Image (cartoon, chains in turn yellow, cyan):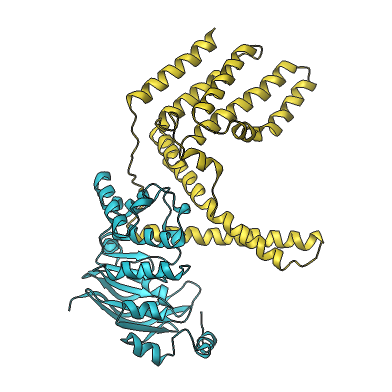
Length: 235
Length: 244
C-alpha cells in the first residue's frame, strides 16, 4: 500500500485540522489576494505574512522542515522567472516573485496538509466549484494510487527481463510500451468503474452525504484571520 | 419456490462479432445459492452482466418479476446487488462510508437514512471501524467486504458475486464465507474456487463456449467436468478449449 505524506498529515488532530474546509479555503483565498497585492518593497509586510504561515504550521503540528522542503517544489520555476527579472534589471521584482510564489505554495500546502482530500473537495463544491471539476479531482486522487501501483509492477516486471542490457533504445521502447499499456488499462478500469456505478443504480447524478459543519468557531476563524491579513496589508 | 431470476433463450454477441452467449436458460429461486463454473472466457461474466442490464442481449431476462429493460433498470438494479471481481473498481468514493452510502443515495434515500443504512451494512460486514478510511488504506479482504457492504446497503433480493475469492488469502476467504452464509439473499457466485462454491451452494451451472451446458448439484458438476483444482490435466483440457 502507498500512502501520500500529505494524506497522513491531513489525518492528524489540531485546531487547524478541526476547522471546516470552507473556512480554510476562504482564508487561503484572502491570504493569496493579500500576498499578491503586497508591494514588492514591503519587506516587513511579507515577513509578517511568512511568520503567520510559520505559526500556522507549528499550530497544525506539521513537521516544519518537511513542509518547508515540500513547498520548495515551486522554486525551480520561480527562480527561473526571478533570474529573468534580475537580468532585466529588476532585482526587487525578482525577489518578490520568488518569495511570493514560495509563500503561496506554503499556504496551499498548509491547507491541503490539514484537510483530508475528501473534505477539501466537499468544501470546494460547497463553495461553488463546478461538480465536474471536483469529480475529476476526486477520481484522479482515488485512482492515482492504483495506477501508480500498476506502473511500479510493470517497472519491476520490465527490470526482471532486462538482464544486463545497458542500451537506452530497448529501455525507451519498454517504457513507451508500458505507458501505452498503462493508458489502455486505465481506460479499461474507467469502464469497469462506470459499470460498478451503474450496478449501484447510478443514473448520472452524484448525490453526497454532505457532512460538512460550519460552526461559530469557523466563522470566527475566517473573520479574525482575514481581518488581520487585510489590516496588515493596509498599513 | 418463487423464481427471483428467470432467463429464457438468451443470446448475446459482442460488437466485434464474438458470440458470447447462446440459448441460455436459467432460473434462480428465492433463498437459493448457485455457483457458476466455466473456463475463462466461457461467458460467465457476460451472463451475469445481463442480469442487471449492463449488457443487453436477445431473449428474456426477468428479475423479481421485472423484465430487464431500459424502463425498469433502476428498479432491477435495486433488486440485484453485484459485487465485481476487482474491488478497486467498485470502491470509487473517497471514504468507505461515502462509498457504501452511494447505492442508497442513488435509490433516493435522504443523506441521514443513507448514512444509517451504510453503517448497518458495514456493521454486518464487520467493518464499522473502517467508516472514515479511504478505500486505498484497506487490505484486499477488507476491500472485498466493503464492496459487499456497498451492495448490502441497497437491501437487494439477490446477490451476484463475480470471483469473490480472487486476491484473498485463506483467512480472508473464510471470513467472506462466514459472512455470505449469514445472508438471506439468493446468491449467484461466479467462481473457479470449487471448495468455496461447495461450502456455499448446493446447485451449480456450467458454461462452455457461451452455452449453459449443465445444471445440477455442485459435486456432480465438479465431478462431471473434472473441475476441481488438483488434477492439472483438467485445467489443460479446458484451456485448450478456450474460445474467447
